[in-house]
Length: 337
Length: 154
Image (cartoon, rainbow over all chains, first blue to last red; front, top):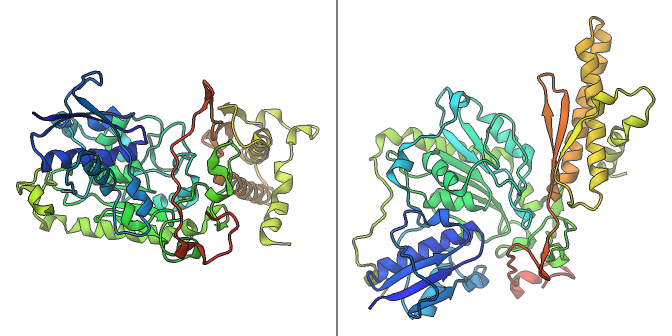
């Protein structure tokens, strides 16, 4: 008789993305042994997910699990990725063995979502490659922000070669860039998922979009989804970076992130009474309003990394057309024993 | 004087309230939109500074658009517009780290009709519980912590 599990996670969408990976791999390692449902703030990330079965918490057979990832406490000491976080937690709670089978979260799209292309009207009349840009973020972790004018310099550099679409949640910090298609505050989470599917690349900090870039299935004809991530020194790169992304970080370059991420929250205090304003959570090395680790990442280096991605795409015609594998025929439980 | 202080001094007069100047064209003063009840604590001062410098640039832009001849005057006005644009950039730099943004709504001539302000909202308290985003603090290992004298380091 399969175990009935409800996995709960009340954290941000980026965190929930990692739970999608854990759920996928739970079912891959133990097919038919669990019936699962979730409780998270972002149902859009679970649409069309084949591992979701409606369960009621009141069902006495249901195990309700509040999910965490305590593994993060060892992220500066061990070569672990965020994707291992929930998996290790669930493995311990359930008494199972789990390991990632795909280095990404698990997002599913319906066929009609894949068919409807981006509607950018005359803005992209030249049919340029479309990149999504997030030029800010939440107010709780301002230390992740890069400077608006640097993003602008990147956008300006690629004018006529890339059509940038700016996205971001209305309540968060997302200063408007010029010469972009402005979708800030105009997309639901599901629409963002679809945008990522149809886009040709993403430019962002360590944020949901980075996780989506890895997790959303590839279009037919794409061999990977380009992503340039402006990361600085907050997180250890092995904890956040995906293998196919250009992850620009400063860990090891500065005393404050010499051996791993500093895991601090804000560049300067916001005065909102949040504990993230405490000195222990503030950046220790601010230069011209930016954390030094972010200041060290120049416009030129971001441009160069996008250029590399574009150069790789030019060879795409010579590559075999594949879709990212969503099934693994190998009995994966064998792989981790 | 430090470079930062130099820059502050350079632009200081741009941020003073232009409406107290006799004869200042009041319709050059941008309207204001955006949320209230926000940080920074001196949000009103921040807004006033943005409005002041945009208003001054509006005055120059209007004068430029009405100029019929006189290259010397055009040059002076253009230089003023560039200077005030620089002052806007500086002000953006001052407030960017706290996420305070003044987004201009312009017409074709760059005349700014409205400024839309966005900023962090104060955390709300519901039922005695303070709503806050999830936060995560990683204790820095001893190997990491000894390289700098930081009294606040965990």
